[in-house]
Image 1 (spheres, rainbow, N blue to C red):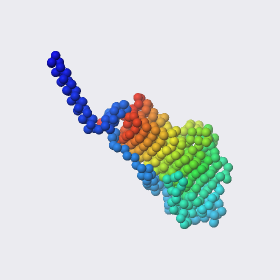
Image 2: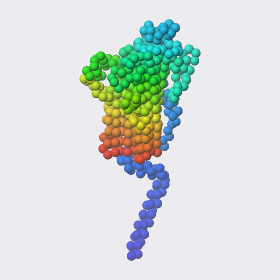
Image 3: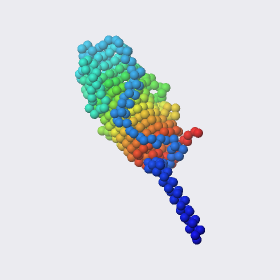
Image 4: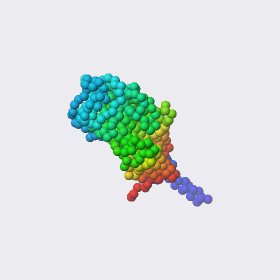
Length: 476
């Protein structure tokens, strides 16, 4: 009997020692480490993968700090794209030399500059190749001034030189069109472009506030507001552009005029559609714009996002501020099938150092539905996402993308989600304050590389791998 009691006592003492050692180990790790272990355990992510992630504290930069990073990135990207030495020809002054802006453009030759004095001009304009259209900067014209509800400023000349489309009939003509084939020596600089009549931009053949069809101009320092369609729309022109859409060949080889313009430091607000839309293989450089409060909900559809890309578009989107668009922030999709031959390249935008916040609950702040391929992936690098009622960054519907160095703060859904899609690299991203797991990888999803991601102060596991999803193990 005594032997048996002795054995029980010895076993109890051993158990006590184990508990003390465990408690001491947990104490040394701290309560946060213990909670992390518990959450990791229910997240389903293999230990090998978890060890490659970061446990660092995630500290969101202030909005002002993020915007400063975005602006710097946009300015650096724009510098080599805009030729400031080309326009050394004549200066045609409106209304001194020409009563209308269009008559001055018609008289201008490549290398000439049409200078427009302050006023409101009720015209619809068509730009020619090599002509610069600029508002007069005399006096304090280049002084930066605030715009209501915007974070950015514009030169004063942009706000006092207005091209107004309200007298026009609804047509394919925007407030400004560009002749197909014009290049980057065609520049529009410093205007308010407003009040194109209301139309349904979901119907083929509609106009945009600025129509960039088969053209690659520079559009800068403009306030594009209150137009009855998408603010700026970009797409290529095909060889058979005059054919009915159902009979047209939408393959890359049939492109006649590309659309690779520079859209730089504009404010795009209050338009009946997207702020900026990229369609049909267009590949503009969208740099340092502020895009907000654009919505087409009154047309009876779910509202469009602030920026969108589809039908093989491949815009480079750097350093923009996209906020308060109820249809979402920056969205890319495949687009509906069209024509006898459909689009034969994936939609694959590149997003770098954009600041995206408060864009409603319908769509993620940044998302891709079905775009990208292994050869032409969607790229999300170094973006800042704040305060969204949906996911921060999401891949969906078979999208293929690279997601690296993004920071996501305060989302109602997961910070970063890979839903039935492929992330070629999911590396060095930071998520904090999600009302859901920080990272979610759902059934049918595949992550080829996952390293250095930090997830802190979210609800549920830091990383959640659902059944039927896969994270490739690192090569040793």
